[in-house]
Length: 257
Ligand code: KIV
Image: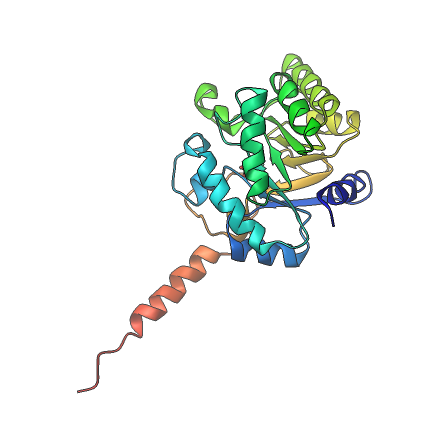
């Protein structure tokens, strides 16, 4: 199926069925998630923390995302692959286009970038070149240092209005969907209702967005050192790895005499 058809299929779910999205950073995970029927696989810059061991996403480079997008693409047959444009790789429309093209060449069907009104020219430039764009509003992890932490968004009227203006501007410039991160539930639901394109929420509460995105390591419990309060672990992969490793260590043998 073409990328555009996948996107249309996902958009048609709005108001009908929940859209599923998970991050993936490697071949086996992408293949397992794809075969399980996930709609969207995001090669998110969260890979900086949960795969590469950095303190936040601001250390992630284009070459990191490129490398992991290639691996995810090798494991994916059906899902829509979205690759994050890392910090400082979309400072103007031409830079955004050049870097988005590299990620598409690596196997991404579309790219995601953070921010609202300031990004509309870049979104228009990419979409006019046939590169689909997913927006990202609310808590913007690439701005965590300026923000001084991961904070809920939309608490004041002014913030809620800015989110709505940003969301409508992203939609107007051609985004096919928007991730809402850590937006308070009432405002997330308001944005979902105001937009024709789907919203995909993380940390926005239940029944507020057209879809949900989660970081795969939170879902499978493979990165136990930091789990956001809103995440639900559905497995304990870290515990299983530890158990298997202890079993391996206990069963090592010496050569026969
Ligand atoms: O990088 C990422 O994992 C993300 C999600 C939190 C949406 O951007």
